[in-house]
Structure formats: C-alpha cells, structure tokens
Image (cartoon, rainbow, N blue to C red; front, side, top):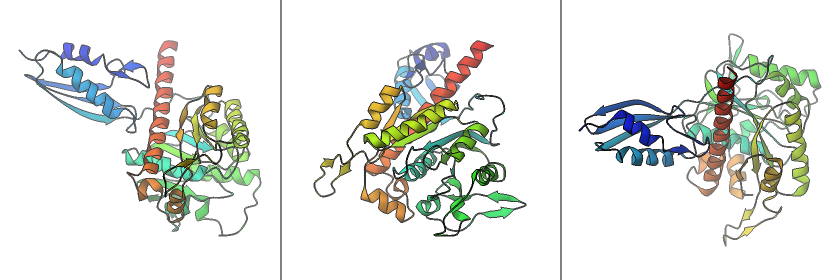
Length: 358
C-alpha cells in the first residue's frame, strides 16, 4: 500500500519549531513532496539558513514521516528562504536587494562591538546566507583590520563595489581615511557618509546586512534609525553595572525611535585560563542576561575575554575563520543563530499581523 500524503502531513504537523511556536506544516515549511510507493521525499524550507534547531527539526520530521503506515524511507532536503520584514513605518528607506538590516550597538566603547559584528557576519555567511557588513564606526573603523584587507574598494561608473572576503561584502570609512589622523566631522558630514554607503554601494542581493555602529547615542544612530527600515538591533555589553547602565541608554534610544531590539550579547563574560582551564569572572558574570530578563528582551549569548580572539582580530583572521570548530567560534556561531531566529520570529509575527488586519 503506497504512502498517503495527507497522513504524512498530519504526522509532520506534530513537529514544532520551538522558536516560532508553530508546527512546520502550518508555517508552510514542507514543500515539494514526492511519493513513489513507500519512498517519500520532501523539502523543509526554513526562514533562515542559520536556524539553530535545523538538525533537530530534520530528525523529528524524519521520525514522524517514518511513523506513517506505508512509508519505507524518507529523504528530507533542508533549505532556507529568508523572508522580508513588513515595513515599520512610512517614509523609511530600504537598500535595494537587502532583506534585513541589523545594527550592532553599544552604549560605550571598549566592549568589543566591532569584533562581535565581524564574527556574527562571518558566522551567518558560513551557514550559506548572503551577508554584508557596513562599518559606520567612523571614529574607530576597525573592520578592514579585523577582516585583514587594506585594498580600497573599486569604483565603477560612480558606484562603489564593496570589498569582499570570506563570503562577506563590506564597506568601511577605514578604507578612505588617513591612518592615525583624527576624524573631526559634524553631523551633516556623518549623514552624507551614511547616504553614500546606502545609495552608492553596489551591495547586490543580501539576506542580512550587519551594521557596526559607533559607541553611544549620537548622530549616526539617530540618522540611521530615522532614515532606514531596520529589522532590529543587537546591543553588546560587558557584565559590570557601569557598562550595563550605559547599554540601557542605547536600548532606550532604539525604543524611542521605534527600532526593535533583537537581543543582548554579553562580551568579556569570563576569562578562561589557558593553563588550568579555570574561569575567572573579571567583570562579574551574568549581568547582561539579568538585564535582558528585566527589560523583557532576548539574551543571545555570552562570549569570553580571550587572548586568542584578540590575536585573531589583530592578525586579520577573525575567530570564526581562524578556528571555525573551536570553542570561541562556536560561541559566535550560536549567537548568530539566535539572532537569526529572533529575526525570523519578528518577521513571522509581522506576517501574521498583516493577515489579521486584512
């Protein structure tokens, strides 16, 4: 007796996406089902290639499909289609071809925001996502150094072709500023730089654009939030109270400008002794997670204070590239996956809201 498609879909309806809190059938993830006798094949199309529970969903789907009478074998192909967010409000621009804009911010300097931005972008690219990185940290544009690329981007027909390395397209004022010279720019010049990076860079088709913001709550943050449709921001902090208090000011800014906050990251969460393996909580520990809980925001994960991460960045070989299977790289990859999951949750909720309104 051949397998029955309806029975298979009913069984697959028991497979729940834990982030979206719905089953994979009602979410429309199950596609292209083919049945030949007892052999069943179908695709599961996720909302991000960086889905943190991809393997879990595949295993559960296979188990449920095999439980159906008449099914002898199951061939599941996991795919992904990053979905577009609904517009936040009228008048905000979108960069053509860019699906999600995600600024990475911090309330104060020295918390490792640029290192986090670069490694998150690279971790997303490792999953197969199309990723760009825009370095708007005008006062300390370190992305070219961390990425290990000094050659300036090429200009063709008045369009800037972004630099590209390790599968990530990126642009930075670091390519265009004189080394060791202070940047003294007023607001209008900063806004002009943002306009240039948005309108005159040939980004192509991207699933995610990570934006490395300068510390604080100044002109660049205001201009970006007021001009561009942003999916949501990630805020980086260290564990101690003084850093968290300043980080909360950045969160307050995003809230006042109606930019969602996707979650918080605790950097320099602990120091792991390379000799003995003991962890030393130099700046305290868990403060960012507690703050996220208090503010009702997702906690995306924690990263260590590590000589290796610093050395990798100084050498132009970011950690997720230098040691992609190492402990530190896995921490960045897990945070990137959680961030992508939050993007998917927000996008799916917006889709549902639009359907209800219609």
